[in-house]
Image (cartoon, rainbow over all chains, first blue to last red; front, top):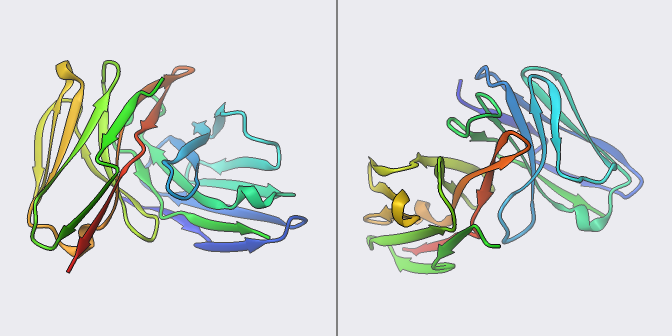
Length: 114
Length: 111
């Protein structure tokens, strides 16, 4: 299994809603990542998890809250988002945070905040 | 400063044409990857190529690390090749490897 699976594929939420994005991989990778991608821009790193622990937070607002319940799962909890947070949210994994070899992206969740 | 530059930003071709996409980087590279993002958003890893040449079907890539550039060649283009092509190099972030992306080349293959 060489896939990173993200759910849902599309999400529309109001500014007062709470929602979660989910990411799952079964490749035995020990590093997992969240990226945000705005239209016509490259992906921007948000968070790095290494061995289920938050390793890097790229100064992301607290309305985005990541969680790694186990080595296969990564969640991104969303609360009180703004319309400018609308974007494609990509999850990725790699064998470890020390290597880019084997980096694999999911197909993303397209989020619209209304 | 800009670490990864891609050219051209946009490329429109007819089916069957060949194309070359370029990626210049401003400092040394230990890892370099090419990705294809399809119109649905999926980022697919095409090549992990810190140096040398690799081929996979109609696609091939060459990285000349000493001259700080990489090239992606697409031969006999098909409409399914459309999308955005990103190159990304390694960047060190608090002891972790991160991907530093270029701005991408948007390729459109017309039938």
